[in-house]
Length: 441
Ligand code: DOR
Ligand code: ZN
Image 1 (cartoon, protein in one colour):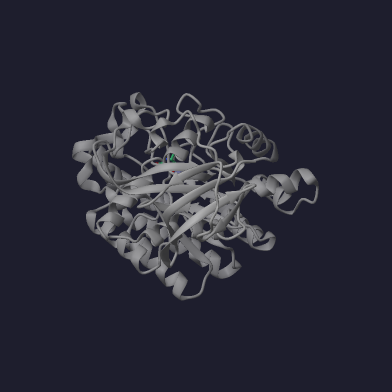
Image 2 (cartoon, protein in one colour; image 1 turned 90 degrees about the vertical axis):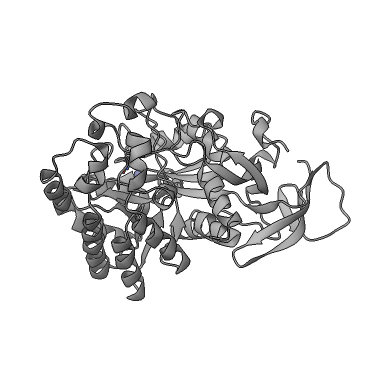
């Protein structure tokens, strides 16, 4: 075990910041100015020191969709974007409906260094809920191990990539059982009937019809329905990728009522709106769709007033050739985002739109608490993953320099201010990964 001294950096806490030397010996942090020498030093004057981020909503495509991406490729992208923990969604092939499928994913993830990958289980039918119950309540060492790697149940209340929409009769049962066993539910909230009605009334074939066919009211109806189940059963409930002003209002009301409801927003719903269809076409086709600029503004407001708990990317790599499919409305939905979340947010912080402390609250503290991930913050005696950021570096986002296997980004050409410089993992004894020269100052 080697020792490391990070000198003169600004440690960001949820509620402020302080310039602090960080000394790490035998994998354990001590804080404050001491006359230490170490095997290695990082001169971090002017840099921000934060716990490496958590992205609690990603699709890494393995197994079954590895022509799009793999756990290995997307974990590299995550780490390059300052993220070392992710919660991965069940819409793989096979879907993560069974103990067997979860076991397979956990085994695969154990081969991956760059990222700690946790997995949601999914369900469309009652028997899938029984598989989750085994994981959540099982007393064998095998089940306890699986439970540690599982972040809860993910439900698709409407179809999206993979067509995992839960049967309506099973939704009640899911909320009831999850309340009983103490497991949280995270849901993709869109209402199938509202979408079907809107789609039937749409004649356009243009990609811009996507958000007309999956309208804002659909999200609101679905959240309202889920909240009635939370009210009945007391289940801990998290709204995935909240995209509308109306939806944010429902979450705000549920919180005011004291219900155990939380939510996340994506960078694409914050930074993109329907005006971007013209320039970006199917590259900005995703579910839920991008919305009006008024909706984006409402999401920023919901961040500011504490309605939004997390920012998570819904990182959903598809190949460019798939995205360019015709007709445009048949192109798959989803955008990559795990590597661009941090630069986007740092750029907003540099403009005074959000604080660095808020970024840590939204992308580390809250997801860590909501999903009980057990990740460590940078405190005396801890062994956290550490992210060192240069907040002043100006650079242009280029897909050719990003790491996702999909090879494109909707944020091509974005003028960023702020960049990850080092991502140090406790599990690697805080060594720099030699294969990532962009992280060497
Ligand atoms: O746009 C999306 N893409 N929304 C989803 O719900 C799924 C995701 C994917 O897996 O491609
Ligand atoms: Zn998703």
